[in-house]
Image (cartoon, rainbow, N blue to C red; front, side, top):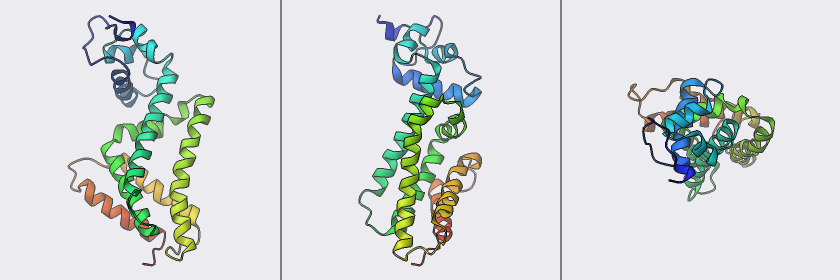
Length: 204
């Protein structure tokens, strides 16, 4: 058996390699937080030895950064697919971005919480590297809203404040939404699309 597949004695087999480690880290960080989780906890939960985990990730910090990067790229991929095929109408593009963000926060609640709560635990080099991805997300929202204002489709006098309000509202869903709580993800997305269009003062 290779080093990358070495099994921790007595641990459940979850499948080898990076995917098992990522899943174990995600669950452990969600339950205990970054500082409450040891690298040994993650290896045990993944069903792998420490040497197998270190084959993929040299440290817990490296693992956190990799998980943050995966979460962010997954979100961007969903945004790209949602906006692909949408015309250039700012209201339609903003609505699509709101819908995909709400759906992401509902379907990947654990990952959304990790991205929000564990950002502060990234070391400066990792935080700086991943900050570029966050800036790209900000630009995605800002470009749509700025375009709407420039074309007279949105009437908000302070586009940056409007963007922050819309994004904050979408991101906060993960703090309160419970599946089966009386509103479906589709209904929630529709509701928040309306909220976003009111915030930007849609004049359609």
